[in-house]
Length: 294
Image 1 (cartoon, rainbow, N blue to C red):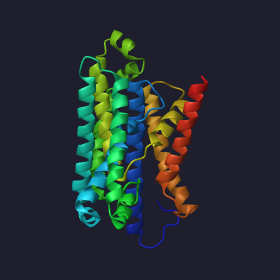
Image 2 (cartoon, one colour; image 1 turned 90 degrees about the vertical axis):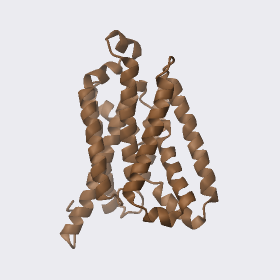
Image 3 (cartoon, rainbow, N blue to C red; image 1 turned 180 degrees about the vertical axis):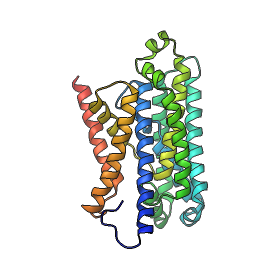
Image 4 (cartoon, rainbow, N blue to C red; image 1 turned 90 degrees about the horizontal axis):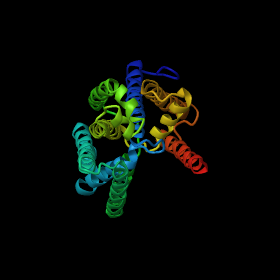
């Protein structure tokens, strides 16, 4: 907040405070949503982004620029765009969950597979629109498709904080049930947990966290995978009261520490989201190799 600060302190503290607050919210939301998603899927190499949230976000941004133009989208009320993005992603996820997880089959594997298919569809449609967009407008669009912590509005930050805190309160009250869900479907049912209902509630909470964080700063695909697996390794615990706070704390440290390194060492030569995605992608590959070796 204060290192290397010069000039007007009112502006410096406000500007840096906004970035730190956005990193705190996004890091917590991404970490918690990833741990919850891995709990219900019983798989530590999956993240909520596999359901196509990042592709849907990119498709929404591309559609807005394709239909209305980059100038009108840039001049639009950010609160309206934020609400549109969050509602679209939450409605998509709830509709998908209820369609595939409220019937007789209730297969999580089918849910993940359909999410991957929708993600491919969203990317394909978005790619087609991007090829038809004017090159000057595509430059504006490309900037909106990468996660950025430098253009967060105060109103959006407050609304995001309320939504994320509300979800965290619900998650905290569900901690014993989450520990049981992590044991598997059969064990959870034998212990008296309504597995289908609790998994559906957990997936909706995951959708809210991912939608809010993505609409606030943009998609960060592999970041949750990175901090969640670091939390598992450092805590050595399967209890959610340990892994959830550890993952959230690691996410905040990585974001704020990474931003500090970029500002003071690399002098903004690259975007933080690119570094995060690169490291997270390496962790994903290592986890796949380790799993194949077993």
